[in-house]
Length: 127
Image (cartoon, rainbow, N blue to C red; front, side, top):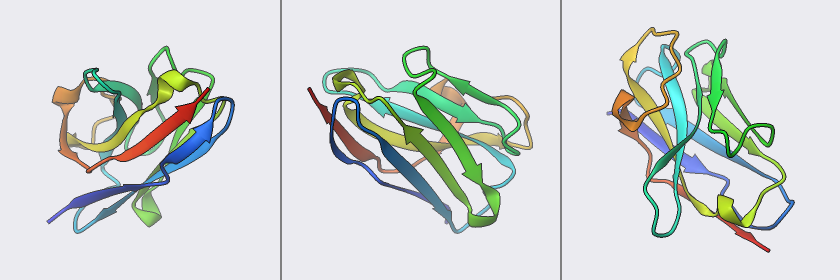
């Protein structure tokens, strides 16, 4: 059974950086679009960043453009999110997700396009 496990969350001061990782086990990784979502306190889960199966295309929420970078290493079955210049409003539980369909070059930005989710890792940014 395929599992996604996030790591790298923690507490950081505003302006700081964190690097999140998502490790996939038990199934295919390289053929799927991958994404990061987050859910802050009292908020709905929202798209953060996505990357196509080969890394050729990426997409970002406007709120994180220029600060966050998504990447992947298919040989290691891993997904990453480098987060710089963190703000208190970035505080959330961050989830990685795998697309429902394989072999697509599209970068999906809605939850409906993703069918497999990790448990999340908490990021807290203090002011």
